[in-house]
Image: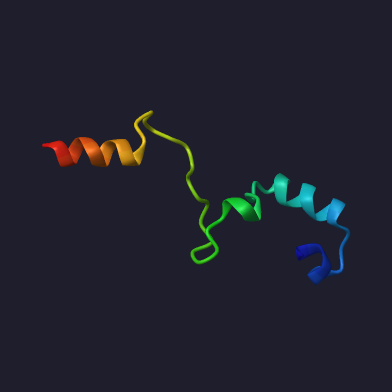
Length: 56
């Protein structure tokens, strides 16, 4: 999409974006433009956490 918009070859645009450490479009929030953090900080899933809080 970007390559077509700028009239460049996609095989050129990809490495340029990677060189400048621009995340893949799939990893960017479309509204804010910020990278989406998908790393888990805990092995406890959200629904398991909700159940344990509800039991209290």
